[in-house]
Image (cartoon, rainbow, N blue to C red; front, side, top):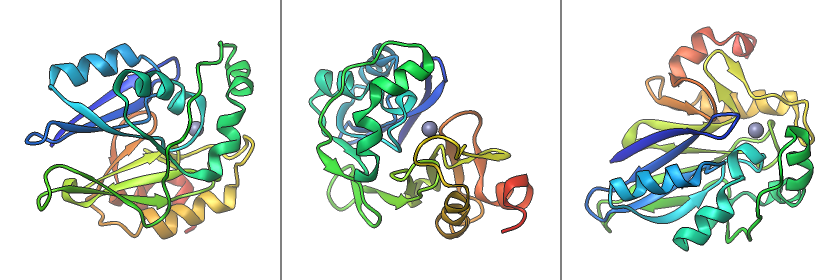
Length: 214
Ligand SMILES: [Zn+2]
């Protein structure tokens, strides 16, 4: 499996591109900005985008979704509970002092228990949707057991957790989501957070100061 992580935009959101070597299909997660760079990486690997998945509707994660969809025709997946945040993309842009990017329709809801498949029938890699609310109400994580990885959005970071002081945030709920949905994954699972360096579930369980009371 091809996996490129591109930090995009002014907040350096980790955009992940997963590509299957045999089918040359790709899933792009959190195309927040710098879509030209995302498209260049896709071209370099001769990949066709099959799905665009949004971990949550903050502008730094979703800002480039309309542009990437226009360029590739791929459907956008997001949890419906973040629709209201996405509807107010202009307000989010004003928080950052930037111009609001174009918006698009969400094509498919990403719900707890759903899974996306990448690769040929019979040998496809599964991306399991985990609903992990708290940073926002529609925050999801994507667990990819065959790759031993979880894409955690802004729910869990190395040594930290997502902020919960923005609209839709809930400090107790994010801890519950981390305890029940993420810390239950195998300890050696690599965590790719929405920003900053990778970590593992085991390391965060042991050392993340926000999780010691769980
Ligand atoms: Zn966020």
